[in-house]
Length: 392
Ligand SMILES: Cc1ncc(COP(=O)(O)O)c(C=O)c1O
Image 1 (cartoon, rainbow, N blue to C red):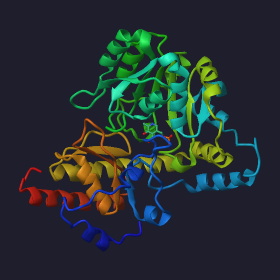
Image 2 (image 1 turned 45 degrees about the vertical axis):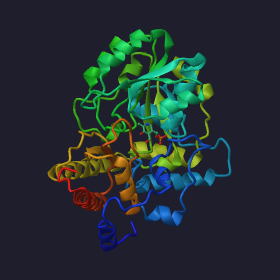
Image 3 (image 1 turned 120 degrees about the horizontal axis):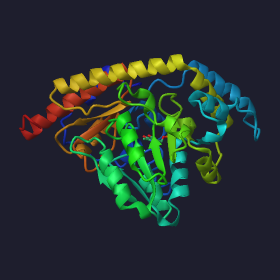
Image 4 (image 1 turned 180 degrees about the horizontal axis):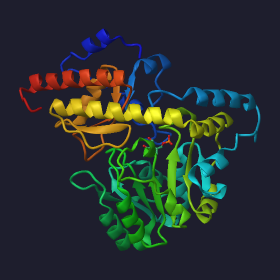
């Protein structure tokens, strides 16, 4: 972060409400949100590098030394097709105690989500899930001429598994697959293991389920567990994982799905197979680098706890997140606040209707979170002064 603390603090002291809307907002907050054609242009490097990035749930620490070395070593094959990749699929399979035939790799787990959609939404079948959740599955559904059946979250923003089962039974003939993001993005909240079991036991057995575990590694709640063991039982389930978050490889694009062999065989023709050799080597190294994973998990959990406590102390409620982001109820519409943060060099999450008063913030380093908190306190103080409302 090249912005000095003094510059930063003074930037934060402008009153909320005098900030103009910036056309580039979506470029900061929507990495996979728009279609390729509609996507805003990428910012220039000089501008990008100055921004404190708390919008896309990335890993603020970057890849570990071991991962960087493996990735750099892999570059010696940059001019080759089909070069050795360090045994990525075998390493993923061994890591989860499944067979290589149960693994499908993709250019990010986003590709796996798309592949599930392309495979199981054929003939206009629909994806059933919650809203808000990771919207990509619904967006992809529209590109394959399908659509979502979206259930609201409960009043406390948790995902109501019983409602999902009931809707799956009601819409049985229309559904291509059920999507559960666990932990959920944007809320950061988990569905506990007993409820995941309730879901899988309650659904008609021939309805495929996609469980998106992109944020698995950040969970500290002992009531949560991965759904991968259900794959070994042969259930119709795909579990997606990513190297973008815990392994800090978002820009390098690597993710995978774990599923029964028949499902993998069904899906494989829809995957591009376009994963570069360098990130394949990086993925193998990342799986082995458990020390760095533990460090990242610990630092993230600490920053999450400290930031949430500070926000609560200021009087703003934070949803119980198990991820590397959280939502804070700012009791006012988030859009102007997002713009105000952006004007001060901080990118925070986009709006997630209908949760339009909950600001999603990614967790950065301890120093970054202290910058965020200074700015947050300042903006909220300015809002109170501007409106005369002490509760604003
Ligand atoms: C819940 C969830 N799933 C999947 C993805 C896609 O990640 P990637 O394609 O980088 O693996 C994201 C990205 O933020 C996400 O939040």
